[in-house]
Image (cartoon, rainbow, N blue to C red):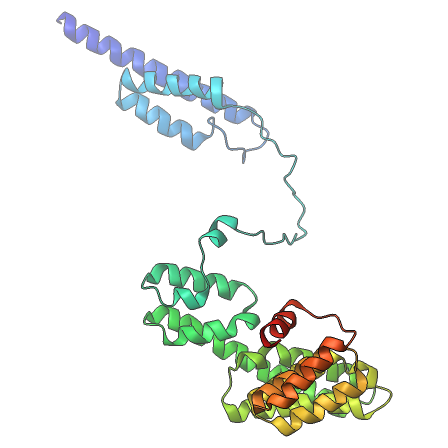
Length: 314
């Protein structure tokens, strides 16, 4: 045999011995391992693969495996910090943290609808859907006419489900407050507050909108007509109802509730703002400035919006 053949045979024999030793070490460690589910580099599947590489790649395979083990032992191997890991089976509800980076790059949905970037619009739409959609339905309603079919599909699905939920929930609260003889005033308040979350967004056809505003007015009047429940009729409830009636141009009904507000809450700002909005909607200039002068003289805390209104018309 030539020298080259002898060297080749020697390399093969030595490589085979190294593979056998490596496999023996793995089998020995597996036998001594208390937990067969433990996942380390000594796992049998990993060892079979490494022995395969070493056997069919003489010299190069063993050198590569040995160097990999040395790097792992020197730099990567270490204990895992399990201090914050919870092994209990109880479910823990973690609060959803604000995604500042995402929010920083978002624009209002109304503005996004005017942009042709469909991917960004879809992402924004999904972010809105994941949040509280009830207060964003008016914006989602605009997305129904989006050129992007996927965005309009998202919007249609959300609108359908949300409005159906509103119809069902409103009917339940209305029937309960009409039939419940235990705490009807509580259900009337719940109905008013729940309806005010949706109705100001003008999502329904006019006829259906009128029907719900009538139910809201009925609940408010139920609280007003009974001295026992009258204190439950807050000035906010009256203002909410008055604004909805103004949108429907029911000026006589708004005037009636303006008088009720004056009777119950003569020192509240909402009493004056209802009269101002009514006078403005009717085009009654004399009444508008008369109420404005009364407001100036009244001992009422004025918000920024009303103060700006006084400055404009003074």
